[in-house]
Image (cartoon, rainbow, N blue to C red; front, side):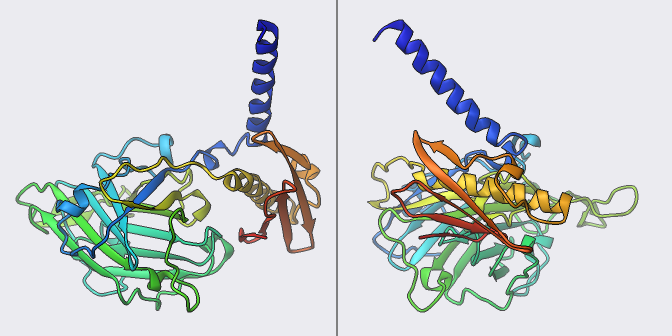
Length: 364
């Protein structure tokens, strides 16, 4: 191949990548690539006792260390947090290690708002629709706050706190002492077994298959505290208001909002026994298509905020009807009414993907 042809191909690729980048200008923080994790399988139930150093867990890989919820926009967390996952026919297993010099907790009743203590949180969207997802929170006292969200809070919808993961098994191990300010601790660990039948919509248990991909994220809420009369008390600003909590997460959201499921990490279930070499996660082509639907969604929400209505055309949003993804032509289409919109993307071969004004994504 001649140098001239190589140069032309390089320039073409450069222009293509930068044309795509220009589409997302100003919203780059919402389109960073989420973290990914390939989950190995175990062939026997795990004992849930809070010990995450046993043989089964030693064969599982740690996630990357947690970062601030806004990613690189904020400093790195001053305590390290990491997690692991495994699965079998019945359960999704999760282990987490939260390093902390002062482990404390106050809330002891089920479904209290556990993030008012330092906590560890699990978010699960099995269908990758950004709707109908699950959240489980746990503190150092092994107190559980579990809830189901039909829609994200941003739609004006609320959470169903009455939902419980009745088969959930959880345990905590303290490396040091709990609620004792007279010493320094190493931290605390969490172990969970979440039944697939509990995180299912409908009657048929949503048990993953080899290659199934879910969206998930983990969060750690960490409050700034000081000692007052021998107790841990949340710090306040000069006006007397409690300082905001730190939010440290596995896959950065880009915004201070865990309830944006489209920003969660990718979790892929593989029928490979834990301890064996695992395949690398490969981003599905459909996820690259979905990015353009989310781009339309974010732009529509911004447009309505400024103009009191949704944009009636892609042109009003500064977008073209035809875009290339991995060199393949994709058609974008937008249908708008007074209060609603539907946008879809289709490449002529794969399933059409659609998003609506509430950020509900569906295929077919």
